[in-house]
Image (cartoon, rainbow, N blue to C red; front, top):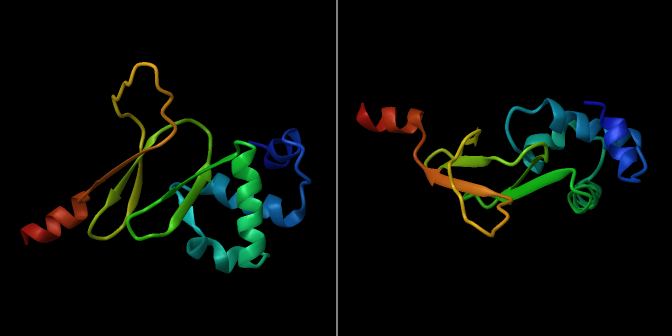
Length: 124
């Protein structure tokens, strides 16, 4: 995916910092929080969140709050659910969840429970 094209199609100025931030999201395999990104970001926290708000309002990014009270972000490519472990706070993208609410548009599903690793640790 061409990040610069994605940004400019939404009439957002493609600054080097914005492109860098979006490339990080594009290469991520799971949602990321500010804390996950801050060491790699060429911007301060306030600038990060201003850009996040812009990208969310233009439909480029999705976000959700996890049970660790952090906000996580990812590219809005296709709707999917997230599994959040209540023990270790690990987040996994769930590609298929069969939930149908007729007449509703579902934008986010978060499933909480124990991940396989934590269940195995509890059995030992």
